[in-house]
Image (cartoon, rainbow, N blue to C red; front, side):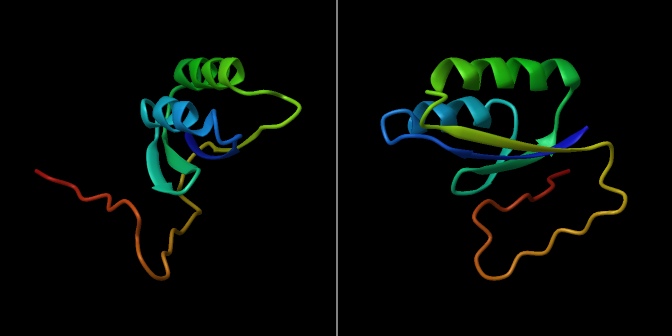
Length: 87
């Protein structure tokens, strides 16, 4: 499945959240990640983020898509993380 994950963590925890998300998804912009992920890895990611976050201060929003068939990605301005394909 394809996901877009957005988080807002406190200053003391944001670095750990960034490092955790980078294990599973592609960083595209500050606090924004996207990519294909299995259901099992998404569950692991959610658990790891839950362990880091303070639920009364931090938040995570995850958009899930079964496929990217009907989506279009357009970047205006600087692309923070180029997704080049090397063969």
